[in-house]
Amino acid sequence: MKISRPLTIGLTTLAWVLLLFVGCIQDQQKSKDNDTPFQYNQTKFSQAFPWTGENFKNNPANFQFAIIGDRTGGANVKGTYAAAMDQLNLLQPEFVINVGDLIEGYTREKEELHSQWNEVEGLISKLKMPFFYTPGNHDLSYPEAKEVWNERFGQGYYSFLYHNVLFLVLNSEDAQRMEPPPGMEESIKLYNRLQTENPQKAKEMLAEFMKDEAVVAGLTKPVEFPEEQLNWIKNTLQEHSNVRWTFLFMHEPAWENPSESFREIQLLLKGRSFTWFAGHLHYYDYDNIDGSEYITMGPAGASWHHDGPGNVDHITWVTMKEEGPEIGNIALKGIFDRKGLDTTMFGAYDRKGLPE
Image (cartoon, rainbow, N blue to C red; front, side, top):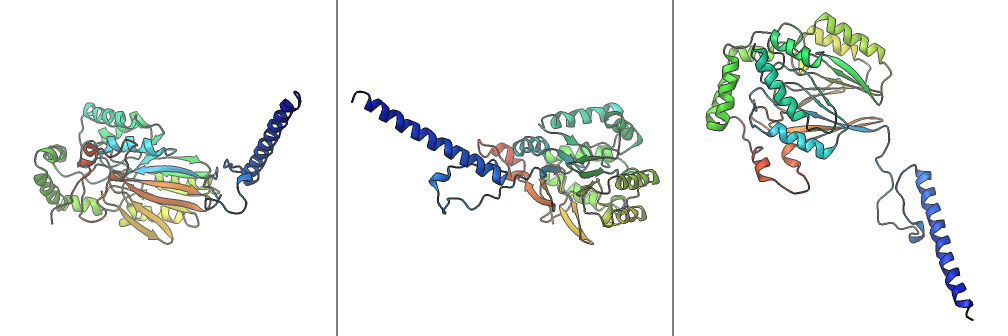
């Protein structure tokens, strides 16, 4: 009798251990069969489950990246881009790529250009993932600005592969462009100062600027791609003919008024799955041309140039899947951390468009 009780307890404990061991094996087998880390104790369920399915979006071939629009060209709200860096860190994309215009530029003073780049690189350094640069007209405004770009970043156009997806960053400012309107640097400084001192006056100034004949001519002039860049595009596409998808980035949406050289690029892309992204217009827009998507990014702190629903500070979130990309836009005002809404931060996003 003295021995029977300990034996009973021992047998009971052993039974529980065996049951847990079998359940663990079943759970591991369940995970192995479905190739998913999802596990549960099957002994607790028969045919009814408190979840809708087990088709988790964890395909190792899928990946996510983010795209961010213009910071400058008349920075509308100081601090917006810095806040965007914090928000991107919350979202944790695998990398971030921009579509140009990170500095105000339009100065020939190299020291000033380096100072502007130091400022924006200080913001970008907060990111916990890689950041890819695309040159814009403000970044490459004068020959001196191009020299500074090459000193700091080496190339105006380049490509890379990620999970057998091809990324092409093009230089829409590569050809000789029109000279900017006289006094451009001073106008930008005045506009940015008025943003704080007299916002209504700043809006009126911007509206008048957008009506200037030289500005209208510059915005509507077709984007030309020199032969050297065209040859590089052709060779790069030929070298990577079997990729899953191709993403192309440039600053100016050349498809709005296509030049012959841009049409050549479109011909090179024929038969290939691809998506275009650009910026420059500070207004979100979507085009579907011959079955392919062409997206113009809204800004991330730059001034709004048009009135309408495309006036939004945002990032674009891309999930690359086997069958193609899923693309979603997230307004910067819609992202906040676990501590809740920060009225100081979001006050910066309460912007209004141009006066009627």
